[in-house]
Image (cartoon, rainbow, N blue to C red; front, side, top):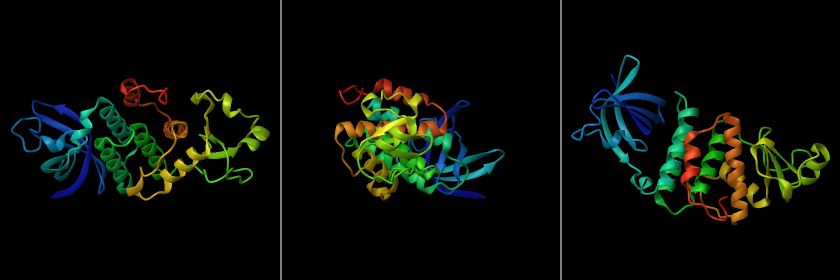
Length: 265
């Protein structure tokens, strides 16, 4: 009996002389592991469609603990991702996150988020830090721990700058934060995650809300001034990483290779 799925190759491992073990993130089955026999051979028709970051259609059959690839056809290679080390590093980070959070259950929305993010990386027209942040906060929402950032959770204030409690998943206005938590002045926030509190400007707050609730095909259709973008990106990363409670080596590599600019400190 065979099963046909569409999936994204999020991880690969070379086995034996020419075989490849692939981890597929599929809409139908969630994350599965499959053996592509002879896929590393230059003569193999499965070589291109079993490479990391590729999206394809796969005909599988089950044997023992693994699926085996009977047929594979490439839908999208995301080849242009490999045009920059920074883009390649970000794609690897996205795939490492998927390897950590995706399960053996249907995950259609998370897969669509991943594909849209890879398209954005490959396109080269959207700032990669923005792509990363949108992926992080939208993934958190899809996984079931979306933050409540509509208004101050103590007084209901909706305007101005806010303090984002990363682990609590809520925001407080400056007045409530100072009164109830003896909090930080935004100007004194040094940005270290040990506080597990991030400052959100009005623009950064709006960007977080947009990334969480917007239609999937409009994920990256917003602009922010550099300072607001920095706050947005920092908050999204801190939120996902602290809730997953683990670091990612690919994220460290991304920061090593990305170009440094005045806005990217």
